[in-house]
Image (cartoon, rainbow over all chains, first blue to last red):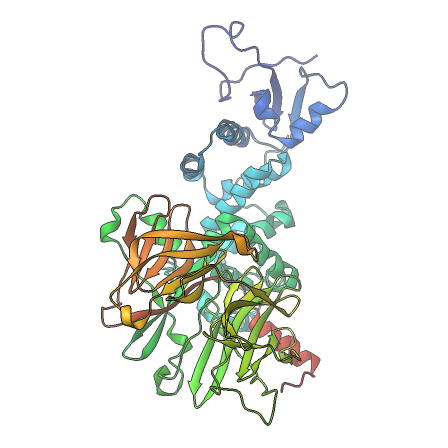
Length: 184
Length: 398
């Protein structure tokens, strides 16, 4: 038997006098790798394909707490934040500007490495539109960086010797110029 | 339970398809730079499948806006100057600013003509296409020669000379022929269409970047051109022509995939006006030019063919700003179209008829805009063709 405990960190938790008086909407409960438990509104949970598939299996009741061993608590918070906004904007006719503003804020305090981790998570959780957005966000953050930065970020070994490196670089010298002052 | 680290993400952690997704969203410059990251990265970025996927991603609107650039020429004292401008970025950075004082700074693409003899005096550019990664450059230096150029990678490929097909007859206006550059989506190949015209008609030939050679269409098409630069819309190149038989006007369409010619009737324009063929967004467009005698008069209307090939779909459109010469730059946003009204670049709102002038720095009053179009940043593809050719060791170019 699983008991669901409301977690203070969960942003889907509604503040109010008493949980019993509140919404009748179904909740889906997940537990992340670090033991945090999240209550998701059903409509938000269904945006996450891996959760949707899990609960659509026969005889899985909504009282089951779904384990997400590959997801950290902070990542779940962000995913819920994005999916909740997405659901909200679905019903709006002209949400383009609002979406853009939200997206800018969403990535504002995330380091590139955190963004990468979140990208991996969005892929695992199977939320396509979030994955698309995060891939775009990562590319924005690295587009003006040099080769060393990228190697360090992705943990890639340099397997060129000096001569080979110069040779490859010489194929497109223009690509290595003006890294901070892109006019084009 | 092991916590995943936030630092030092190993390449192994990120699935390859995600890596590809991220890379395919980068602009061309960093992508080419990151070939130096490692050998696997270099192989990936150069791989034809990746290059194909990279081109396909522009079907996504956001990626398209990120990669497109305005490409235009400015003519000053008989010199042509070539510029590129990231207008999307400029508009994004300034969307809250009063448009009145905005001045955009273009980048000069002098690599195209500086190396030429006489510093490019003989360079007469041909820039009239949309959504492609290359543009066609023409040098008139005794003999006409064409090159395909990728503006961002600065690759350049000289085309073999177009053979003269009806020897010993020589085409009219030797060297000045019909031209069009387009992309055949059915085979993913760039093609250049050339038309040599004679008193009794026009002979077309097609150059394919893949074969690096010209192929003649063995037929004398009964048309004579009024304008030489082809308008590319809907996978075909178009010219305004006169039928040899009765001198009536018609638009001909050279289909890039089928390599066939079709006719498209004009809209009902008044007999006193002459017309000019252009493109308006994704539609064929006819703007009007008044007879010389009425040089003081202006027009407020033009026609667009809203359903390709359907004569009844020619629709009259109005502008609140009168023009003597009007063309569309192939650049447009949700709210505005960038049009060239006589000598000014204007961001025009067709919803309410308002507009504002786009000022471009460095361009003084002593000149005028030549041709305007857009290109989309694309990965190197010209030099790859060269390598492919060399490795095959055949291909005779005429």
